[in-house]
Length: 234
Image (cartoon, rainbow, N blue to C red; front, top):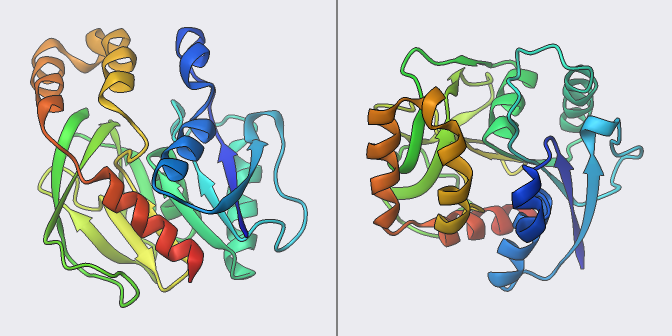
């Protein structure tokens, strides 16, 4: 049985911890609901915890975070160096939201605060370049988003998987080693409805209300989850 390591780069708000524990636990429950047969390890990156040996897990997933990749928190530089080393060692790497941006940043791309502002709610992206190992023919995919930073430039080896007018580099992949999403396949509607109202003033009333209204739309979160599992099981 393969092992997936969660590099947890944030802690949930206290009221959300009671029901969801952490981003890593949300992903564990999400993958288990898809029927995944995986072991899991959890690394608290903000406390300085990172994998210490090559092959410690079969793949690693970097979670979302309130932090920006350009901020000078003490844990970001060590994580960036670890990602660069892990990539050179052919480790499989998966990024979501902050993890997506940091993977791009670490591997030679660029992420920054977007002049387009916040993107929240259900967003539709089109499939641009499909890796050969991806076993479906979808032309579009919808996920829940919550971000105002974006990947502005992909790493040199990357190919853009998902794109929209608002988020040009919404997902990318590198061969059979890296898969990265700006959207949150692990977010449920209930979690999003509990998370985002505390950011309403920062987001702005119009963008907030329009974004929250989209949560009635279905998503392809399960499909994105299966894409991740396909990569892990290659």
